[in-house]
Image (tube, rainbow, N blue to C red; front, side):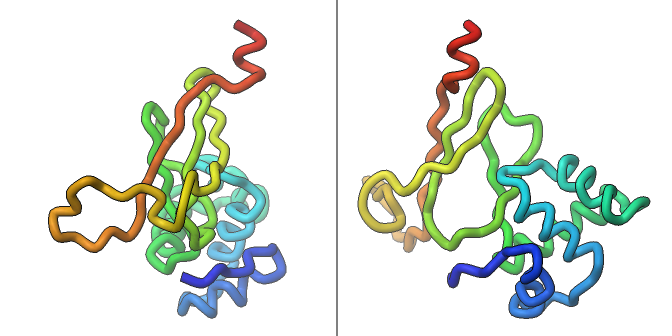
Length: 146
């Protein structure tokens, strides 16, 4: 997958290149994703509502699904998270580190080697496309408060 330019001014072009119709709602959701890393749909909805009052939560869900299917966004499912998080697709095989106290999530570059970073002992005849790793720990702020 090629890396797309997700700057706010490039949202319409990004949507067009992915074969999606450019709408105010899609542009606003893509802009919200570009401004926020690892965002839940509820958070994206709040950001979009400040720009387009009255936009429905279900509309934002649908747009996030469209962006994910088009390879513009990707879903991040983390253990213990209340809901899935979304981020702009980077076209790489990065991982995540998650604080088990406050829930903060950060990107972690590929640990070693080329994507996928991990090779299973037995691939059961499958061509491996990616490996997903989540490191869980306690961030420095939460550790200092303990």
